[in-house]
Length: 57
Image (cartoon, rainbow, N blue to C red; front, side, top):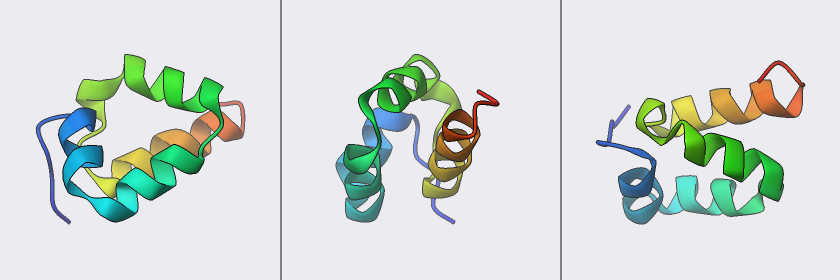
């Protein structure tokens, strides 16, 4: 699994992560952006999004 410095780098450089991120509801994207440093791989992006979508955010 490739790791990136932060969320911005992840969604800029990984097309699959960018597509997944862009398809998330806006409130989930905003919450993930506030934790941008914690999101540094596609797996961590999916994990954060899943928790937020289930209400465990």
